[in-house]
Amino acid sequence: FHNAVAQIRALNAGTKLNMVDLDEEKEVRDGQVVSPQDEDEL
Image (cartoon, rainbow, N blue to C red; front, side, top):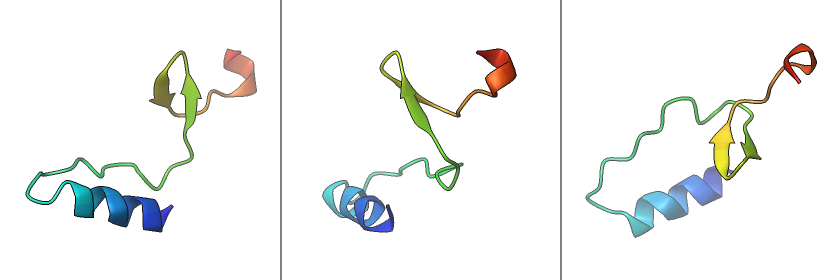
């Protein structure tokens, strides 16, 4: 994961990237990267 972030930063030098909450576990749902839902919400 950290290697991927470093590559993204290198490829987008000079661009401010939003790195907020990147340490959280995420999943892809309907083409969007989102926080996982609780089983109660499913």
